[in-house]
Image 1 (cartoon, helix red, strand yellow):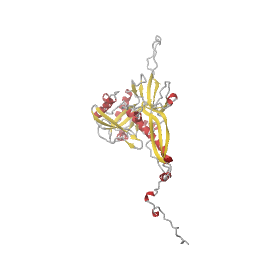
Image 2 (cartoon, helix red, strand yellow):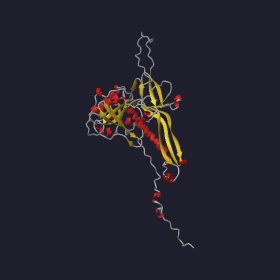
Image 3 (cartoon, one colour):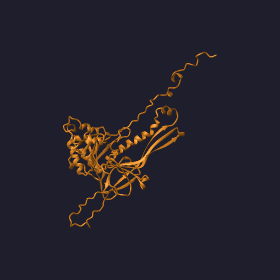
Image 4 (cartoon, one colour):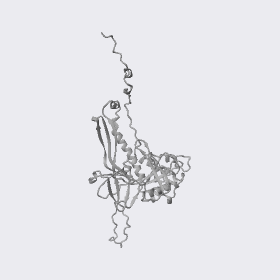
Length: 420
């Protein structure tokens, strides 16, 4: 007969049973938190984004919108990578007056303006498991259930990066990939605070020449020149109006939105600076109204420059020598992947602040986001991909033909300032 109690006592951990430590299970919290970058309260806001349909009929432009969101319809619904839309231009004839004038032979012709919108593929995939000890160890935390939400979040962060890349370099990076393989020249419109109007970078249709013109202007400016203060804000407003940049109507005022790097905001809110905004606000009473419309608003200057902090504002690094300058942009990429410069060398590192006006950007989605799944090893391993096709680009108007021969960019300006 067995001795009483023998076999009843049990070891209370795996190690005492002689199990190899490599098989020991590590406990995890059942609560999983998703990390996310700052959302896009401006670019994705319905207040400043208007859906327009691709089609054959001329259309009036939507008013007070920063982003034109193009969606395909009809024959354009089958994932076309490029669409050209036509819009009606305003009448500019002088008219006829008095009772002795004739209309016959003095008519004004209807005119159109054209804009091209591009779309290219994007995709991202994440691997997972569906059974096995590794899967079961993590199943309590439901980690694999978050693959799709994380991919959707990644796309939101990618879109924010692409908006800013298009502002600075004309088009989002995916449009440079095959089969489109589009060039990405610098934004054609530049304003350096502290630089005289006659010395601002001159536009050139040749990308290398434009880059050299901007590089020469940045190299010539001193560190104290290339910063913003209230006086230069007022000058910026006049300069934008002279260049026919289209303002937004916000609370009854024609306004431009100036997106500022956090460094620039911090520098200008320093009350120890004699020329800082902290010393005095121009139209400071307008702050509450603007803040209701655009989150992150710091204030309004001169009744028309709304200053907004952009946590993902790009940077610029200048390299090279005269007639061979190179500007290297830096962006905050998805997943807190910091690609911006942190340097503060004078005439080398700059914050790429930018102005947004009406019809600044085009966003064209030719294939809606969707999930694809692949399984291997009888379903043990699998991958989930998120794919679609879209593109972001400056809205460049062709005012004579649909073939990019006379281009006008009326919605953005780059305003670099010295990093501090």
